[in-house]
Length: 64
Image (cartoon, rainbow, N blue to C red; front, top):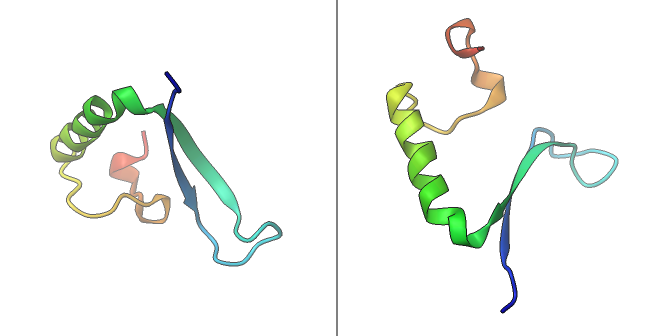
């Protein structure tokens, strides 16, 4: 059976040397997708992060 992966990526600029500047990402084995999604949603709720999480919006309170 073939393995499937999902790539989560974030770019912060629309224009860059290689289409856009790539700053971070995660490669997720598709079999772990549901548990990872639940874990991330739980952490967002725990931290009271109700909107999209963006590095440009990080305040000192959440920096650590």
